[in-house]
Amino acid sequence: MSLASTNLAIDPARLWDTIMDTARIGATAKGGIKRLTLTDLDAEVRRWFIAACEAVGCTITIDDMGTIFARRSGRDNSLPPIAIGSHLDTQPTGGKYDGIIGVLSGLELLRTLRDAGYETTHPIEVINWTNEEGSRFAPAMLASGVFAGVFTKEWAYARADRDGLTFGNELTRIGFVGPEPVGQHPLAAHFEVHIEQGPILEAQDTVIGVVTGVQGMRWYEVTVTGTDSHAGSTPMTLRRDALLATARMIEAVNTIALAHAPLAVGTVGLIEARPNSRNVIPGETFFTVEFRHPDDALLAVMEAALYTAFDRISVASDVEHVVTCIWNSPAVHFDEDCIKAVRSAAVHAGLSHRDIVSGAGHDSAYIAAVAPTSMIFVPCLKGISHNELESAEPAHVAAGAQVLLQAVLAMDALLTERLGA
Ligand code: HGY
Ligand code: MN
Ligand code: MN
Image 1 (cartoon, rainbow, N blue to C red):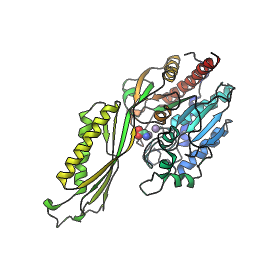
Image 2: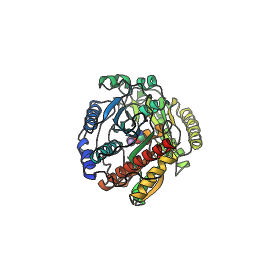
Image 3: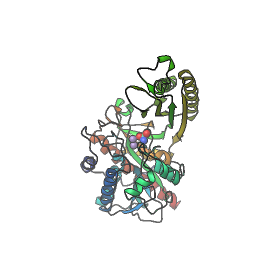
Image 4: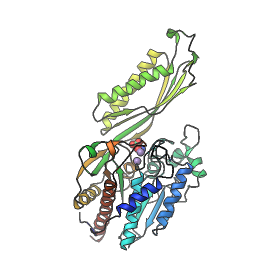
């Protein structure tokens, strides 16, 4: 993998200032960001992103899932672009870095090329994928999933948040239903910089994660039905307590994940009890379950164990339940050329690095199905993410962007070489 113009370097201070500046959009008192997808705050950061990319000479395309493509021309604009993608939406208690450093490292790459007057052969595009987080509208990676043909646009538009608002109506409300049919947008390659969101790089004092793939993920929605009744006058033996049954099911999720440790993880992240009144035995609950593991076959084993355990608990608790798998994202292995481009760039920059599989989901997991893809991880403090305390070192963020720059230039050179072959 030959490295193209290797003296090009990003501007660490400019990148850091841009990250801190945009963090004010949705800033929380604890130092994080709450910028849920398709809210007015998401719309505000989208408009900021478009203006910033137009200021470096990009043209903007928006598809009908709201994904924004900021394009810098190359020598041969008939070629599909080399893309840098990630997301600007956050979790409700999100941090300043998850997704954001990926998009803003792409902007810094554009600024660096503009300052140097450097022209790539391929066009370069920086992409803001809509609804990566899946917190408001499940599942995660929704727009990149539609782009890759995993979900239909109609199914995505009908996804509703817990207040019953739909993705399609909210996308229309914020004015980001773009003219380009989703998926009609070939990419020559896709790179994504992201914080690891786990403890490995920091624990091993390693600056760059050469991401070789993403583990498998499955999301479930569960409704448990018992009987609302008086907390004071209903004997313990006559109760059909949906929340008690749910507590037993949550314990079962944890037990199943631990049975396949250390690679398996299982989480119940969202729970609603109804009528949610302190002196009424809960007659109904809604909750979510997710399992993740690098091996899809083991995910299937965990899923079977879940169904068996929930059936047993329902009978024992005299309640009914319905469990639906709403999302199954298989394990993904990234493209070897893209992986090599990232690794060579880390070596060239003299940065400590190691191969790593992503525990978190990313848009790259879906884009890998339609374009050569890989990712670049940088450490975050104690591996904490999806938390307002999420934190990263300026030097590490700069290192990720520098590796991104060199990986993109190396890929441009490699693909151009092959064109001439
Ligand atoms: O859930 C995930 O792994 C990602 O952060 N959306
Ligand atoms: Mn992310
Ligand atoms: Mn996230």
